[in-house]
Image (cartoon, rainbow over all chains, first blue to last red; front, side):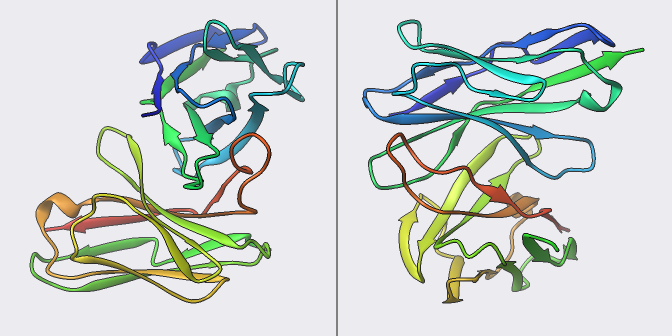
Length: 115
Length: 116
């Protein structure tokens, strides 16, 4: 069964600094996808970034990058130049290609950006 | 234009009542989902439909019944509501599977259900 582990319940970062949010995963599948979502205090779930298990390069989307280390089964999210608006819950998730197409989520990390 | 919409946003009801949550997506996606987020913010899949056909039915009490009248709509009906059903329910949609896993899922704004 798939499992996502986010070991940091809360993280703090100074505005304009970079921060790394940790995510490790467990799966026996060879083909899978890894995702990060942001949930601000307003409650909506915002898709940030995707990494496929066969992608050789780390995914990047603006200030977000995904540090994918397949052998270590980790998919850490790096946010560069943090902004106050980055304060939110961040969820790591994965999907397999077993036909279910569901996302399995981690417990989330609450990021607080300090001015 | 709202991509995935849900109604209502808030739902307060008493134990034993029956309620429905509606979801619509205008992204042209074939696959839609219902997720439940509990009080500890943990998100878990409940159901998914692909082009009106049920493809995921996790271990959810049969008081919960999804219905998809067409591929743009997926509603959730809950019978005999219990206190433990209080949560935020999210609808989502995606293009479906791809080479590695699935395409990203786009979520609705959520429906906060409170059962008293």
